[in-house]
Length: 632
Image 1 (cartoon, rainbow, N blue to C red):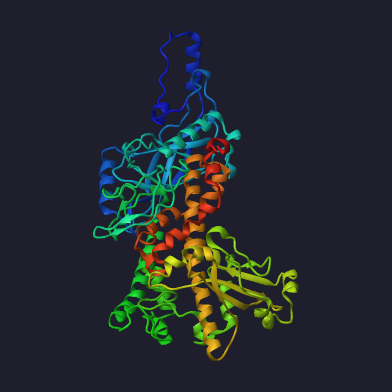
Image 2 (cartoon, helix red, strand yellow):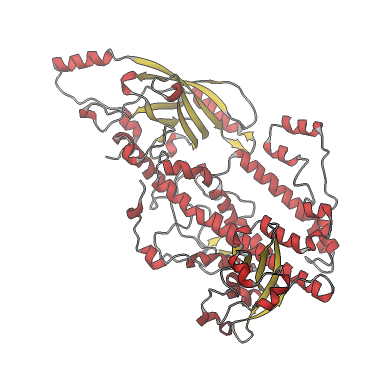
């Protein structure tokens, strides 16, 4: 039996039966049951605005306190009650919270003392129910019960980390379980029912209006198509519910992104500064994270501001005329004084956002931080050794792979794209092989490749039809005796002039230091680096890190109880991802957004990141039922 309101469960009314001698004896026994006082502490944080308390919310909460509308807690036992009351939970009396230990204008944690009356025969509590009768929500971090018999170390700890809204905004009460991992097969029957009820509440109801309590993980399908009020900015729908009707692609119903009346498959664009994008409340940034986020954003704006203003006055807008233009990005920043005084000042500032803004290291105002390689020499980046080192020690090393066969082959469909195999031959790289033949290097696992050819080739014709011009690149690398890599050759490829089905046209470039060959080699390395940077942003970072993990976050919250061992293992790795993805859809990956304006694929950036469709068969996946692999 799944209950919808735990408060009703806690208030169990006895059945109206004729009073007997046996019943009178039972009543006497109940009166003689030994009760105990359980003391503990609750750690909370009031509603805040960045690093500051919401003063009005605190005032209204205090008024509710004076009117007797307080926060109540009930401990719940996991032991079976009497057979006649088998479907009820035994609970404590309402916990009484004492005064907080201090008051501050900053949004910080506050500890309250709490006491419960508990029947010793009920055993250790397995969960607790909390009701917020205040005006405003608050953040519940934890509940700790001290000196409890049977508890590990005399303590029972409940990790909550959740926002508690006023009780009238919930369809059922908020329940939290003790901090003990437990498989479903090992869970007491009554607690198992409580777990299932809590999961049903988290799943929400898609047929109802959007929830106001911010705890639900309802799902929907989204596209990356947006419409601007003055011009249509559309991207192709990258996934269709016709093919896979149960796949989760969004965090929740888009409560602020309303359907566009012109194109029902798109969403209306929000105002740029509007951050009111729905994600479950507990998935949003903490006030510390949000303060850091805004501080970094402010610094980023100031770093871009000066170059953009200077570019307007330049004859070649948004272009570098020389390497000196690049170096100017790092000159003249506002650097705060270093030393003991500034460090002490940062320590006494109570607000995280301002602490971040007055840092005397790392990011600075108005200018970008100078890369370490330029601190030594402004030409060090041009060497082959540094090119390979940055490739390996940079943002995208996981794409480098050991070469399995020579020459490298393509996995693109030859019937559609023709011959896309590499044109690199042994005579191209033999002078740079340190005396090894290709076959010897393959056997000794010394040949490696950074291959972006197949990822880019299907989009090159469209990308090069814009102002952006680029190539699909393959970079061959040799592992040397000292453990470093050195480039052997770079292949730059374009689609055939007569059409994609005719294959690719490639040019091979090898290391050179002087003359025209040296300059062309530097340009080839630049194209390879640009390919690697764009692939990192769109595939390695956005797709394989942020986008791929979002369905797992939703499924875990909808299908796994918080006390399930797998949930406890995964949850720390999910932190902040939902909020980051929501903001990314708002300002980064939307049509004509930041990503399309900065990475080389431009308007085809999101279409490139849809390569996940080649990872699995849609038909086979759609035939699988979620019930067949449920962990709960």
